[in-house]
Image (cartoon, rainbow, N blue to C red; front, side, top):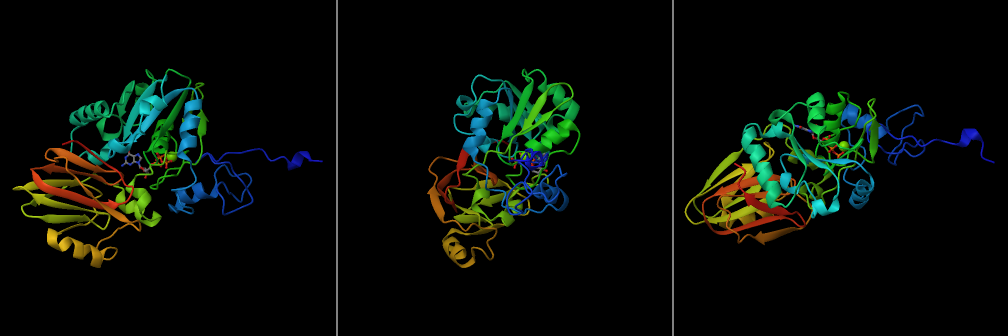
Length: 358
Ligand SMILES: Nc1nc2c(ncn2[C@@H]2O[C@H](COP(=O)(O)OP(=O)(O)OP(=O)(O)O)[C@@H](O)[C@H]2O)c(=O)[nH]1
Ligand SMILES: [Mg+2]
């Protein structure tokens, strides 16, 4: 017979929403202390920034979407302001129809040196239109709008028509950071790595409202999925982006570390402005030397790099006046006509071409 003291209640980690367990240190949710409110992984992430387990695994994106669909409430969709293009799933509005959706754009403090707030706001509105995404409200956080908590709450109020608000979005968009700001307390675990929040994590507020932190929806076509866990942070900007400008007069190849390479034959002059993590090294070489450089130096001089196979994609669409956005990496802006342009990047990493942001 089961004795009452054998019944262990299900307790969730306050930091990441995972069910706590006390038996297996190698599985998610482990904590050695029964009275602990946080799992060991959250404790270590918060105190030592230590990864413990791969943060790219374990959360099934379809399950996250299904659970959001089944949960009644206002959807607060959080998007990383550096990568609006890859912040949504295909058919976004069809996935989340018949509910109020507020879009919150984060990390705009990283854009302060390159675009002003009015232009940025206009850019987002345009971009949403061209991606066929419609939302009921748009809030731009950080340096371009507001500081968290009270202001954000006030801005959310008109749209948060339900007593429940679900904060969801791609992994690493800044959902848990935003909620900590809104709560004015560091309750939820945040980290530089995608995949920090493990399960749905409701927080009941004194005023009767509930806000729910959710696991980020993994972006399988992001370059972050194509590199080792230890490399991820080298790709993610933490300081305002400083663009680097290149003038291309003759056939040239530009390698971003060993992550990707872009080969250009200009018609006359092409200027390229790259918006990437500031410490990534760009190697420029005459086009006829590019193949040799890659075969001799990928992973040594050219790093960070990917263990995945690479593929070369010929871009026939004119890029003059356009941005080429690489999923998870950043974007480059082109001015001037090219005769030929191709890029080599790890397989399954997606890209978009859009009207220039700046
Ligand atoms: N500069 C800057 N960094 C931010 C901002 N918001 C979040 N971050 C950083 O982005 C990283 C990810 O933030 P999280 O809050 O953990 O993101 P998340 O969406 O909850 O991530 P998952 O739980 O993995 O889906 C952390 O390093 C944060 O410090 C912001 O507005 N500006
Ligand atoms: Mg989170």
